[in-house]
Image (cartoon, rainbow, N blue to C red; front, side, top):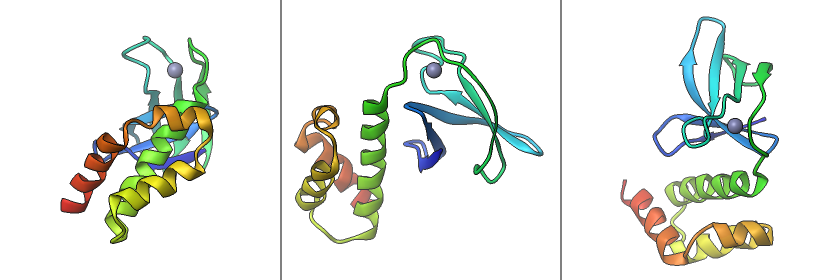
Length: 125
Ligand SMILES: [Zn+2]
């Protein structure tokens, strides 16, 4: 189970090739919904401890896991945090991130220009 920042300033959980977004925080646990809940009407969900380190329970998905898209999401989040922390050029960060990705994820990361724009936005923040 891995927690990364989401695009909207929240958090995402990555687990077994699926991604979940935080939907509600209760007194003792947090509910997470599969990111495909709208597009695929998936009812996959997770319940974790408040510290997000323990899986309490989960519901299964109506689709196959997608490790490639998880990998790409992770790479993008990683790029953004690198861009915010370092003064490296977007070209360099992009090349560095790409080098660490499996081939199928490389194809899904997107065009270099698009990703560079994303990094530059982050630097200007
Ligand atoms: Zn799902």
